[in-house]
Image 1 (cartoon, rainbow, N blue to C red):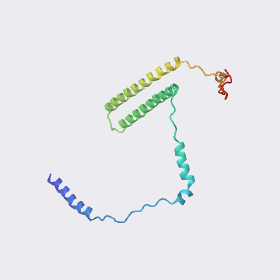
Image 2: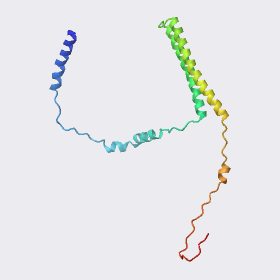
Image 3: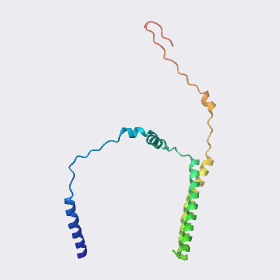
Length: 169
């Protein structure tokens, strides 16, 4: 406890006087804007990068059921690849004698069970969505039916200026 107190006291005695001896600059600081010639002389790199960043934005388009099915398939593939990489890592740890054979068996069983649970969930979601998609009938839109629809707008009927004149029907 005394050693800690001595360290803190020594720190305070050396740092505090040092902070008070530092002089604060009283000069007004000026910040100069970038020179316009440099910005204008490099329009290809600076301007194009800004435009490229703005054009790189991709708005999110609502995904359809087929897109979600493909995503489920990609996730299932990713699970199997991750599992294979984990098994290889555990095997390498056994060869390097970082883990025992019993520990490796336990880790492999745990990784296998986790991967299977994830795969089963994704597979069930995939199968149920595929079943729903197969039952849903989407009628193709006919361009001819849209082209045959005609909307007629009648112009307004002018009112006669003479109140005694008969009105058109």
